[in-house]
Image (tube, rainbow, N blue to C red; front, side, top):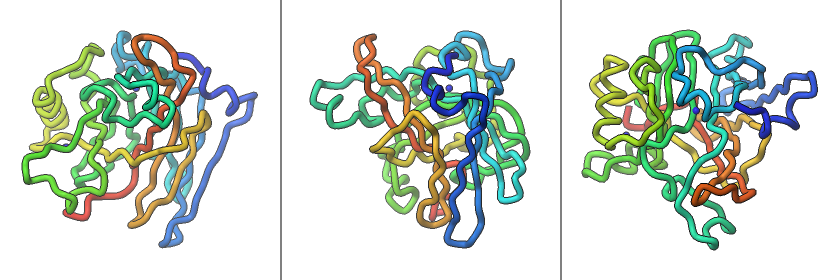
Length: 233
């Protein structure tokens, strides 16, 4: 400080996919893909950008924590060389829609701020270079900012300050609601959950990469940190 099943086609065939990895503390989070459609709380102009099926995060007891709907196609400004080597979120404009998320119970974001149960949009933001946000705050500098669905109804880009303000205001917090994006250099169409150092759990997936309004046939990786907190908190 996101309606087609095309990318999930290998996942379904009538069977839900489960993925689980053990953390250093022995706890085990898991994910499963579901046919749950985008929530009605998400405005139609945004909903139509999203995959109409979710990836669900489960706690160690198997209880749902949240559902995530990623964006189908992500627009980027990239050269042919960048497309070949792999596009990062620095080639994507800040405030682009990344997806949507629904929390089924109280949760905390990367800053340990309390997030109420509900439905939220997710938009891209870079960590500010204001001297207050250093490497001690987060290992990586790209984030998904969440906004209450009722406060974010159009997919157009926002001013970065407006995004931060709208996020914080809609969550009734002094700071935007943030979830760190972990680099995903080998994106796949099938989502997976990865255990990372310091008890971080990252939901990995791939978004169809679009450049100049055209499909590239490539995937852009996204790694959404759903469990884990800033070392500064």
